[in-house]
Image (cartoon, rainbow, N blue to C red; front, top):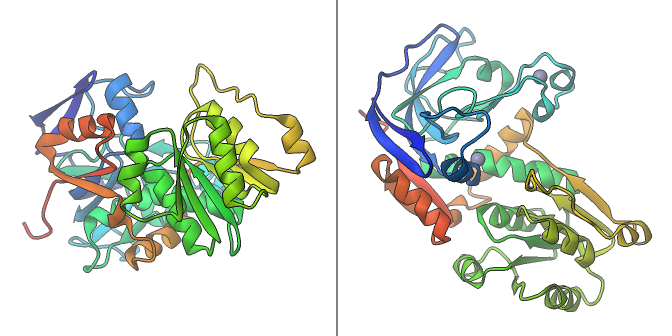
Amino acid sequence: MKAAVLVGKSKFEIQEVDRPEIREDQIRIKVLSASLCGSDLRTYHHGHPKVTLPYIIGHEYVGVIDSIKDKTNTFKVGDVVTIHPAISCGKCEYCSEGDHNMCENRRVLGIAMPGAFAEYVNVPIEVIERGTIIKVPDDVDPAVATLSEPFVAVLNAHELLETTVGDDVVVLGAGPIGMFHCMLARNRGANRVVLADISQEKLKLVAKRGVADEYVYIESEEKLIEEIMEITKGKGASVVVVANTSPISAQQAVKVAAKFGRVMLFAGFPKANPNLGLDGNLIHYRQINVMGAYGSTPSQYQKAAQLLFQGKIDATNLITHHLPLEKINEGFDLMTSGEALKVVLDIGNRED
Ligand SMILES: [Zn+2]
Ligand SMILES: [Zn+2]
């Protein structure tokens, strides 16, 4: 089979490799589409502590079941499915409580096992028991369904934030994830949704797609605070999402939050510098709730997939490029330059 193998710094090679042998405890998937994720971009440029090159990465994908021995008879060869890349153990203290995103023994496709930037990928059959494999209806574009993994993490964040009718929501970071936060906040009835970024180009690209009510260019911290206070009539935002990895952005999030505001730290911060230096007095005196969100649970995955499949969240809005597997390097370069939002690799067809 053809596979895009990450062979070194910023370099994939298209190689002919053996199709993975199928074991009883695995499902073999013929990949239809796979999207490039921000975390893949980091691995592409800087490597990954748990990945030894050469390696096949990629974890946001949709495919057709090519081989399966499903004792539950729920899934069969030919089904088009999306599968969450994080495979929880189902046995630890957290899994027993349903908190699979906190699993002590989580394995992730594309890191702990070869990923989906290839014509075929093998997945542990446990995903059936876990409820993290979902059939994709015929009328749903596979490219859209590849985004169920990034989207469900966003859903987890808003369930924790309890984003609801009347909220003024500010999202810091106008990438695909920031866009998903805006779209979901709207879906949950937010009063106003504001998307802010330090890059004017990015904002321009996103503004055309109409995901927010206001777009704010962060020229300086003062300007950001001024604009958010003006939009919220001096109150500040009831929900602020930090959808980027900058500690400065986290500081600003607290500064634009309203009294009783909820602030979500959605992304990981640089390992060398994860200390945020937040204004503790704002948090204390204004009773601001700063929280984190990571991953998602199987039940959230089911909900997230339905929101995408029914078009209640229009994920096509995020996709700027479709490329063949052979052009994977170009895809990552488009992400690096900021020209692309989501890049989808079209790898296989349903029929053949
Ligand atoms: Zn991802
Ligand atoms: Zn577990």
